[in-house]
Length: 242
Image (tube, rainbow, N blue to C red; front, side):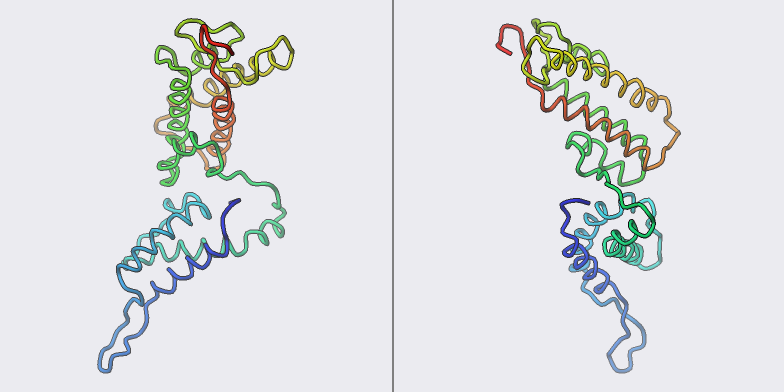
């Protein structure tokens, strides 16, 4: 959750929890309890809370409890999110898990934008598939091709061969006669093949399967590495200087 203003986020969650509390009627002769906040104010604050929870407790929607009162489920999620933000450091230290974290929102934008909507509803397999589809589409856009995709697309794009008409290349560094340049290009080709053969392709046959959030996050991280390589590469086209 790097980059998040934790204190601000906690204050926003507190505000929502406060306004969605039920209080006893103060009107003489009226028995019962009423929600503290106004409907429009609560709805507006709920929008902010949902965005905070997406960062603080990913997958919270899948755990949302159905209740008879409108805001109780989100109120409970907000309470859990507040505790997570307040005590995260303590929990990691006491439980022996004070290690670096990977935040899905800090992955390459192509990957998280492709996975986000399905990830938040707990559909991790489809989220990873959509992220891979987004990566493939962005790579096609960068080199201006629609005739190849996935493994073949990356193999040709990172090829050490010179660019040809209709077959642009991606260069991770300025082309030169060095082991470093050749290693970077071959590494990108091999990694892309591994990503699509080992992650993307098997998922296309697992329509009814699901995976854990942790495994899905690791898959997204692998896709993010490749996305960053593609995004940061320069494009070499036939007849143009590299």
